[in-house]
Image 1 (tube, rainbow, N blue to C red):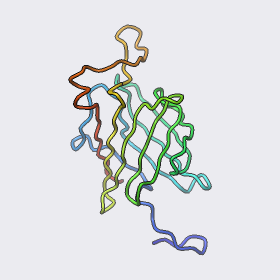
Image 2 (image 1 turned 90 degrees about the horizontal axis):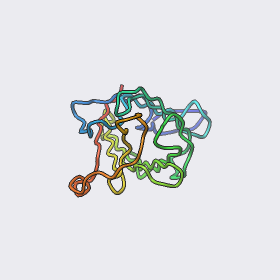
Image 3 (image 1 turned 45 degrees about the vertical axis):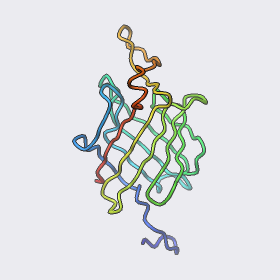
Length: 165
């Protein structure tokens, strides 16, 4: 527990810096991955700031920033070539439901779960209808493609494990 401005608040298990543990993660090859995620509820009044650094499927560095509330409503995200808004909804003290959208189309959804000891978090992301954003071989422009029917049956998933720093 932390005393703050005369009140008593429970420490948020998401707060802080998280680093990708690739050896424990199961990531689809050639898809985007965040290597570091920072949750900060102190820098913007009444909002949470989520920043992420990582690489796109082709190795291009990426930096995203989102500021909003964990209330399930869409808030703008910057730096993400695949999405222009994102929402987080707190399911319980250790779990968030995340949805990323481009326009009104859901691009990816997932669960973010902090372990009971607060030392790691698992992020499982799923693309709806097994649609993924990939690069075309020619001009390296992004396009949406349906993955094979066999992959669709399995579902396209990324499970990333992050360690608290």
